[in-house]
Amino acid sequence: MKALREKLGDLCHVVTKGTTPTSVGFDFSDDGIPFLRIQNLNNRSVELDDVLYISEQTQKALSRSIIRPKDFLITIAGTIGKVAIVPNHFPECNCNQAIAILRFDYEKLNPQYLLHWLATSDALEQITGRKVTATISNLSLGQIKQLEIPLPPLAEQQKIAAILDAADSLRQKDQQLVERYTALSQSLFLEMFGDPVTNPMEWDISNFEECLNGICSGTSVGGEERNIKAGEKAVLKISAVTSGSFDPMQYKVVEIQDIPQNPISPNIGDLLFSRANTRDLVGATCIVDKAYENLFLPDKLWRLDLNPAKAANWYIKFLLTHDGFRENLRKVATGTSGSMLNISKAKLQQLEIPLPPVVMQNQFAERIQLIEAQKQEAQRSLEKSEALFNSLLQRAFTGELTAKMAE
Image 1: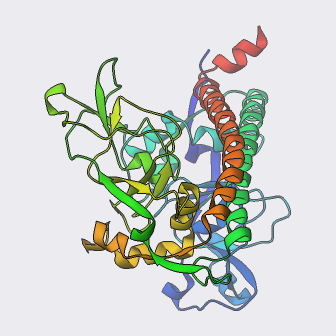
Image 2: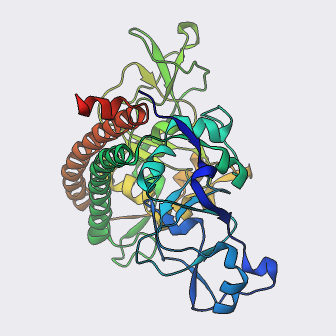
């Protein structure tokens, strides 16, 4: 049986938002009362990293948006829909206009229940005007008040919240494990080779072309966004490389007459490089995990063919991924728009890189592949826990989940 719906505004006795102090004649302080911004809402809680402060006098002037323990926060401008529940022993604070403050009776509405419901397609459709894929730049307090939430008895809300909390905890642990393997790989790179920007180990500096046998470019071709069928071929999208791991699901299916002659298919060990992208993502790299004969490279993805006597693919990948060194890639990129940059083959070949002995690079590659194998296991576990959570989330607010438990 579906729960009756109630407007969120009818369940709250406070729905307000903050104000930037400088807009009403007050300044920030070096210390004092924490003043929250969007970046202080993380992992569904409130963090005081990178926090601003206001004085007691400013806090009194901004009394409408004083935040107390147990308040429910939601971001309503810039990044929409980040939520947090203020911890019980959190200090009294305040916030800017990008954060809305909800205060309600916990005997009527469980905050964890609300937190999870706001992630459902039901909530997203209401927020974006019945278009789940739509994006909005701000969410008004009036829109928040009009959100209609299914409201079963409190005991059922608590059961639903507990189930989703447990599933969410599982996926967060898997995510943290993946992140630990990533950090371990980065630490190993720095331990063996040092910072590639400052080059403290004084490795020889070479132009990139000295360790290349060639750069193979793909072909520009249109395609259709759909699942590939047996016997078909698809061209990869730039997003196949963007995450730093090869994603074979990022493709467009190409009609047989449009398939180029001798397309370049990704193969195991290939080092792929994104020559065009946004400032943050241009020069993204990945290493292919196996052969994909039904896929081929577009013109914006290159295969970097390394000279094995000079360079190992895993060393070059981590070099080009290093945050500091990536600025060197951005410097050689060109473009008329800040949203899309491009790197030419000539500029990439002339890029100066530290080049340790290839024996060390190969040792690094061997160790990294062991870490990557464990990371892939953790990634598969994360995908399963994500799927479980999403399945439970879709069933939780229809009454189906608790009905199954009652049987």
